[in-house]
Length: 454
Image (cartoon, one colour):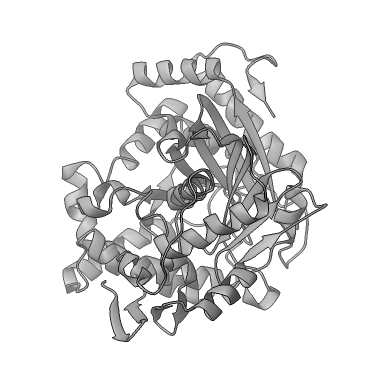
């Protein structure tokens, strides 16, 4: 979907099928002034050398992002995405609205306090030299958010002045255009899309976690992360290579086993029915595959997964095939043509309330980011050094979101959960049992305390 300049300086294009889906999810939190699945990306960094005014340096970097990636200042109007080219007055207003300096607040407390904002926003904590960026999910995917963070840090290290008014030339296309997806579907494609969605709807309820708190209204989102040192990661890599499986498939199989172990009796023997997330960025037209050049876009989709847990070996084999379905010609030839009608069907599904007798889904969802080093450096010139990174999302449902990534030869499992439904104790246990399952099933060295960072 291309941007068109409907009048001087005013650019518009229709929302993509993926944007419409995630915006519908985001809007579901509006009655409680929260935004489901808003993406948050964080870095702690050190400035070396002489930086007279760090606040001004970060603000200028954020301003540069408005020029390089003007989608961060776009907005939705009905079924369209709109960008208005800036003038000095509107640019100053946008900076006031989206760039916040936060003092005397810990980043975890800031994270829990965030509310929806009209545009993506940057929070700078100068006392601890931390950045937290919040972006609605319908704007961006996880890889894009990390790449945007990378570009901000690079702009801090290498500041430059930009000339606004022509930034509309930098708007990136929607996923249908970037991936050559057909806007028009046939009856056969619609039927195939309905069959694909039925893999999810016909296999509910799913196995899941016990709800520990009886609140009906979501509260703040919390996160808990465990990080494994390089010796564990190397052993995991070797074990997965020997079995011709991916780390993502192995971790997801272990997460399912952990969920089933912790599930209440009423759900313990149900299938695991959830979603797998797929980055579409590797399959885009070559002009758009570099996430650092096109970070502020939603080039991602979710596909349904339903698996009846049996053994770890059998489960991981199924998951290995599942995660390759967009790359395997024998499967992808059937999947790609129906992605647009499938996502439209998903949007229609979440707009309709579930049957009253259907229990809320409580199974954790896995999102594997992969190797973060591809998108985020640890040093930028001689000025900026990054010491900590994480990615999280606002979660308003009863389905915890578990992120998996590696960075700087360490593997991280990070769970985002709503404090009105779960306790930290259970979320810690979920990740610990996942770890223990990997150790047992893949014959990894006994961990003890050595390779684990919390």
